[in-house]
Image (cartoon, rainbow, N blue to C red; front, side):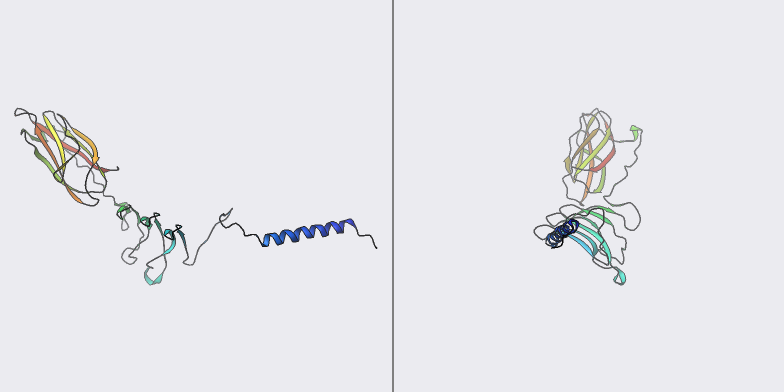
Length: 235
């Protein structure tokens, strides 16, 4: 029998190892949960959907409905909580009259708590009032010498936050309180100004009436006051 060179045997053994490796890799499922050094591209009106184990949509990214005028795809983003309620959207429900997609945030009860102005600029919600300038001369502040509660200021607002921050400047000589729809919110001041942060006790988006009331400590005193700030704040 002719002698077989060792290098040929080595090559055969290498080929056998390679064949076994190929057979093993053919029966091994590749990793599907990692992307290393690359990117995923979803085009041509496709979308990416994430669902909970119960089958509820959690996030939707890509083509959203309705389509734009002429049948053009609308691309957007919809994010939900795991209970199915909306949390964040970049989407328009009226692509004809409101073509710009506003960014909106939703609370768990379905209220829009943040939205950009899709027709101009800045915020659409929440509504943020500018504090009204008031006189520096205390002699021009509203006043009362009555020892009974007297309304000195009256105003209206739309509730956007769960709590209220209140700041009212006052002279000595009486007490102050703030009413929301004729119900006192916060403490009663004692012979001076009033400042507090308290739950407003009204539903979101409801219209309320504020009243600043004062009363003199006695029949010989006078109390003067001027509202400086009424802000909606977080809880």
